[in-house]
Each structure stands twice: as structure tokens, then as C-alpha cells.
Amino acid sequence: SGVDVSLHLHPDVGEYSLYAYNGYLAILDHTASAERMRIDSTGRVGINRTPAISNSKLEVGGADNVPLINVEASGATAGIGIGGGSLKFFYGTSAKMNLSSSGNLEGLENLYVAEDIGHSGDSNTYMSWQADQLDFYMGGNHISEFTTGGIQTRAGFDCGAGGGTYGNMFCSTNLSGY
Image (cartoon, rainbow, N blue to C red; front, side):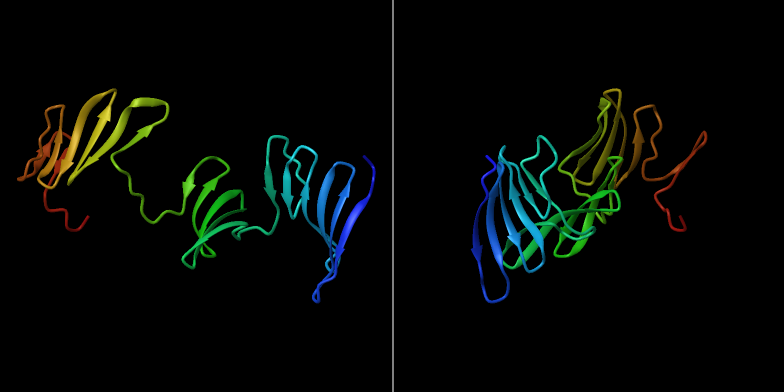
């Protein structure tokens, strides 16, 4: 503890050192006068930053709105970064989806689900997809379905193929102009 040990590397384009001191190991970039990576005494790793979050094992620092952690396969890259109060998911260098600090998923062009989308606070209220059909459930009851043949509610309203007006609801199979 408190012993300063270092290994200096002098490549043609810059000078780096591996530095061990007071419970951490660091890689220093002397050309840019910056610490590039640190491993502290608990095993936490910081890249471009000193690890500061107690339960974190890897922390990466860098610019906003760019992918900071990337994966690559067959020449394609994808990554994650942060900026504007959102966790950002990238394909290449283009942000494709954001998870905002308030928990909202933003920026999707399309969302594909296998079958259901539900409400986390009410497990028996959800939308369910089947081939050419969308069903709505509330309180565990199947309340309506949308199909290529029309809209049907379980409360007695049946649009069918012909359409019509039922109370305050209008139903038509020809929705041009809407």
C-alpha cells in the first residue's frame, strides 16, 4: 500500500504507462495527459473515468449521443450510449431507440411483439395479437376484437361487414377519408 510501481511503454505514436499505486491499477496516456483505464481494489473497472458507483463493475465515460460500448459481428456494429437524459441504443452510429430517464421508450419506427402487450400494474388488462386479429382484454374479460372482417365487442355491439351506427359509435368497413 502506497508503493508506486509503473511500467512505461514508448511506442512511436505516444507514451503509455501501466501504473499501480495505493490499491488501484491504471493505464495512463502521457501524450494526452489522461488516465484511460483504472481497476480499483474492489475489481471495479473504469474506462475513461474513475469507477464511482459502488455496485458497478464496469463504468465507461465519454461524449454524449455516441455509442460508448459496442459489439461487432460481420462488419456491423451496435452499441449503447447516453445523452439528453436517455439511454440510447445505436446501430452503427445512428440512435435507433431511447429509454428516457422517466422510463419511456422513444424513437421506435415499428414495434413487433410475439403475442401480448400488458399493463404492469394490472396483469389481466392487455392487448393480444393473433394472425389478422387484435384482441383487447380488461379485468381478464375479452372485451373486443378487431379482425379483417370487422370489429366485435363482447358488450353486444357487433360491427360486422356491413357497418352501421350503434348509440354513440359509428362502424364502417370503408374508412376512406379518415
